[in-house]
Length: 123
Image (cartoon, rainbow, N blue to C red):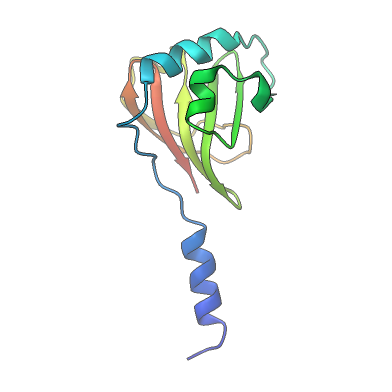
């Protein structure tokens, strides 16, 4: 067996991210917390962890960033892969979609959870 096969396989496996399981999340509370951030910028804004509402702190995000069009709550990331929640009042009528740029230049796959909240993954 090639000596690079196992390290390459481990690298690929640890870089995979999936849609998060949201069954234990308070989605209405998360939506209200995101709304309270009141992001008005058309440019991506990263919200410092110490400024997050308690409801968002409870889900322990790696990062929260957004624009006036929507907020990404990053729950898992590795290399250029990430997954988490996307909250936006503009996409509420959709059930799933792809191709939205979340600030890192990579399109993603989005699945509706509830109301204005979606899970997403970008690989």
